[in-house]
Length: 508
Image 1 (cartoon, one colour):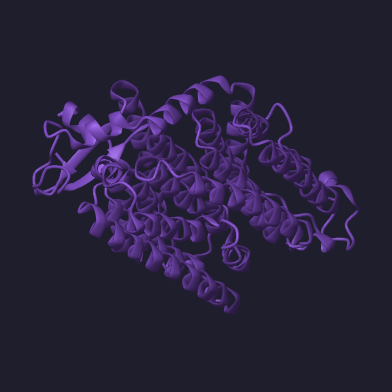
Image 2: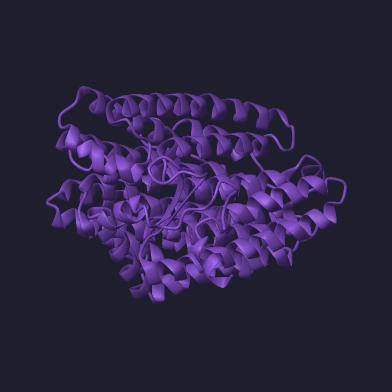
């Protein structure tokens, strides 16, 4: 029985939130029970992700094919070090946001289905990380879009409806481009299993169809990830949603597009100098335009939204270089950025809670009135700016060092320049919100609720821990990068007919 549980470890991070979402729907008229199920499911999802990490540590790659068909025809779930790390950091972030949400989730949001939608989105995110089939990746993207739209309009305000329209239009375009790319790829290769595609595509040779498909994949994933020049929908829609949802979106949703790019362009389209040059220019543009967009904003949510874009550029830089060191730096950067960026949005919500505004011009004096909040802000802000010894320093060091080693000094220069402007943006928030005197005296000081402090504090501790003890994550990133450079284990484990195959009824 325990062996079967361990063998199905690749499924539990998806099954747990799906089951909990369905249970929350059944408890629609019992908000307290929904909240209890929601938190229990987040804790179980974290346990499932740790089990998956442990299983990956023993076996390297874990694959499970079910539906009554063997690979490459059955539905495959595959976990390697990269996907397992993404699932684990997703679970840790979701639990922190769930605890934070105890103080920020309103009754009307519970009545409108925030918990089933939240859990459904997590299931879709984990499904995208773990699927071994390119068409099923599209399916998980669609589920993610549906749940995201529900969360975007959870308060039914005019601003949220406007933001949801912008989000929907661009993301529907992304899914259409993605689906067209899948159709062209299937016509050329005759298979949709990603491991099988990794085996078949290199044998096709030069093909106009494959070139078009790779370009369409880059555009489709680029829209979802917020790459330059397709990022403008993100700051136009993100600031309208509730803060706990915004933190989840900021930490995870763009990273699903990034993950898809890494998976597709290392498994199927690993070569191509012209493609890598295009990705390099996209990385530089994403960094520069994102950080300049942040510099002219005064709403803290908009500042942080533009910084999602600029920091995505550092991760894309790793894909552009295509070396093992660059991949390792990008993986380290992804994990660091998910934690730090989400935490900054949670802190923005706490700032709004005590000051009543997101506008920095109307804020001030928080360092004197709320010194703990000031300390909690300093940790992710300094990390985002790349100040040692926090996690952001090591993340930036790894990708910039990889740029120099790959003879791409101009990319390293862009990264260093954008890092300086990031310091400017974080200093701007610090000076306006925490350091300067408050422009209008508040009648009474509002405290930051304990659940908010716990959620923010947990993510801050992770940031500090990674910064002080980066060796373990560096080693893990190196191992994950090695499997991207040489994916033979991923391919062999997925296509091995002797691998565990579940019956048509589902997982064992």
